[in-house]
Length: 371
Length: 187
Image 1 (cartoon, each protein chain N blue to C red):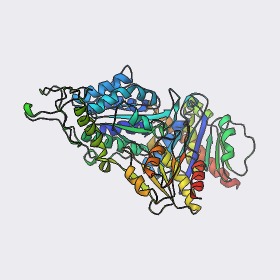
Image 2: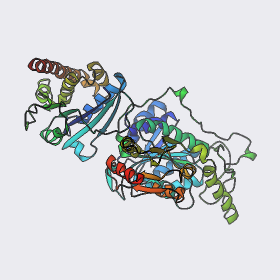
Image 3: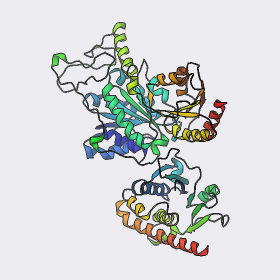
Image 4: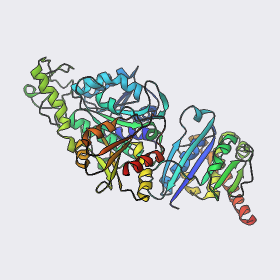
């Protein structure tokens, strides 16, 4: 199956029973698959009037007790960013897959890109800590969608799957394990006494229950700075409490959240930092470089946000250079630079989108870095 | 066989991408191989030149694209003109007999012509052209088993046309076996 279909299957396996979306190339196949499969599992699929409404419907469905998802790509994701901020502020679990295509604007509808990496985190206004994952194959589209839901439920945070047109439309074997072998974090709804009900707890931790609308508890949900009951408290002191919690529930748990895939990084002179489809292009350059005797390792970001600052810091100074190929004009390379502290050279191998890199270009960068 | 690379090409509407999907599914699910399919996606897949790439391997495929195609199926003149040059000596070239005018005899290649469109028309509809060609490819390349290919068809062709598609596949397959033995006798 292709990556787009695997996203839908991953959502269903994770217990997602609500999907609201607006079709857009190259993500439409996910919506089609979910719509087709929804009646088989008692799920609801709604084609909305636009992307603003899609994510708004997700926020509503999440507070009504459903695990929920939408898919889109750049133009739609831009429209979703306002309510993405609302979801983060109201600690609403939901999953958005962005099957990236070339931008800016409507850009290259049918062609691949990785240009929305920064937008995923910095798109909404205000400080915003979200989780973003990046699959490199249809199999990972399935696996990481399940993981996205689990992280989203535990940390009560929007989780974004940053895939791309190439992986979305690539067909490979996808192994879907029996349901009892898939680890699923169920929705945790509060069921205690009314007087103890608190929809929010600002302790920089995950694992807090949701309160489901209709279960009889009185509470409030707002994008304003709020107290534990959800009611607005518009003071700098409360702002500090809420924002610290929102940021630190992700940042302070980064070690538990972050997943990387490393190959021959220890002892390497050059480390190629890549993600998604580009890591599968880079692998060819890495293999060829090794044949030339260059000690080159690969570090693949499976988790994009939070960024693996600790690991890059550890490697900085030990490796001569980081080579960062990505299908954008240089986005995650800035994060690598920040965490390399000037102790290792950082080389961007950028690309304006519409295609994957020629592996030769990455190989050249590795060669230059090793000199 | 460690890795084999196949390019399917023709024009949009011939079922080129479907060919790659069927072959990839057959290999992945029924022949115990790994296969990665990437395709033309966009307006070109719906009318003009259209191609799909299939990488086949005994182990997990990392790099997903074709670098050294060993097999080319070209069902249009444009596809043949564009891609035959990338085949190495000994590569397999399969062309649609009535749609492709050869630029040379390609004595360095294993060259096959299949009248896929005509066979499909004999079966009642030229829509089956791709299955005839696939059957032929299966027979002459042996990159995938005919059994796996037939198992892969349900879900990838409409149920009501399953039988006729199998028939088209077999027609191409048998013609491929004949072509193979003729080539063997000639050499």
